[in-house]
Amino acid sequence: MKRLHFKKKARSALAIGLLPVLLLSLGFASLTVYAADEPVKKDWAFFNDGSFYYEDNIGSAFGEIGFVTSIAGVDINILPLRSEPITYERTVTVAVLDTGVKIDHPDFAQAIWTNEDEIPDDGIDNDENGFVDDVHGWNFYNDNNVLYNARSYSEDAHGTHCAGLMCANNPNEIVGVAGGVSSVRIMPIKVVGGNNGGGTIADFIKGIQYAEANGADICSMSLGVKKYNRELYDAMANANMLFVVPACNGESKGVNLDESYRFPACFGLDNVVVVGNLQCDGTLHYSSNYSANLVDIAAPGTQIYSTSTSKSGYEYMTGTSMAVPFVAASLALVHSCLTDNTLMQTKNTVLTNAKQIETLEPYVKNGAVLDVFAAVTQTGGTHADSQQADSHQTDSQDDPQDHTQDNLQEAAPQDSNNAGETEPAKTGPFQFLLQWLNSILARIRALFTSLIA
Image (cartoon, rainbow, N blue to C red):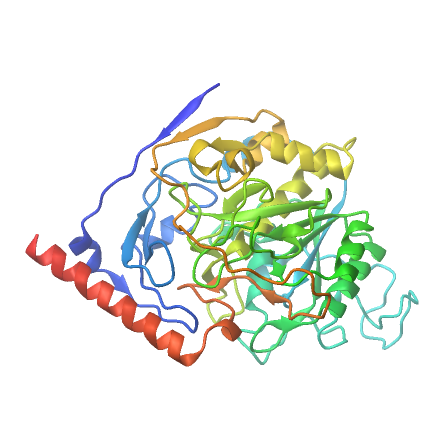
């Protein structure tokens, strides 16, 4: 078995300190630094040559600022696939249960699912499925067919970012995992929204039912709740679809899912793939929850560049939410290519052809890391011998949650934008002030140390 040896590279804190971009967000604050030639290094998840690096808290949201330097080869290994003569024959639809999606983003041309039985904008439920003019999906949060709130730059950024990682097709900015593959379509289903990205379990379930009724094969759901809900469990267990869900993020650092439950990740269903947040150095991000029993695979989720509802049309986000669409789109490619596969066989193909990083094994089943090329060509199973001392940046303690409750719980996206934003509801003004001051003090210490070194 081929073994890959990863070595970290050191960089001068002073040199990088001359090129800072200060990014403070609601939630825990963080500082991020990009190299001067950042634009050519923004897609480390697709191709990591070892030159990308950034600044982040280490160990937890309250940890000191440090540099995370990429290790060449820690990526989803998709570029070799794009030069292969692969035929994608089977049409595969991926439902995106999330915030809304800016479906008119130019990078989504030809990638959005269309309900062929519905006549656009005639005010009639032509296919009599109970949803008027659901041409490209449905908004359960507002109970209408408006999939994107054009009056807000932030409300639907999360879903738009996730969608881009799956299907964007713009060689000058980003080509998603299935970008340009005509047989793969995404079906936007808005189940959360508003300023806090909140929603209800009832809408979550309706979204699942809508996806299956309209032919979705895979559900990409970058959402999570803390309390067990039997109706949600049943909706997923009884569906003839694959679900890709996040391990979710801890409130200040990741937790062990064997002890602190998050759902759907902890349902333990066979038709669910649980994904952790991989950094560019082959470790899990400190915020990513983990479990060698429950987390099936890790995929890039830190400082991920994709489509957005911002004025520029693109931005970086961090979180297990970002890791989910990489896996969902990879499942779609495999299912489209291997036309004899059942959905469960497709799941098995992706997981058994994953790369393995030995030091991830305490946190992810078999230390599995997504390898798109190996999954599609069925040539995987490479073992990567990382020289990291510890492949998770947290020594987290359990924060016990009541997992026996069956009440409705807000279903909020488990992500952060740019600089580490948690769910707004989780972080009050006092916590934010402490985190902001901690980041500033850590930054001052780092600069002072570099000056006297």
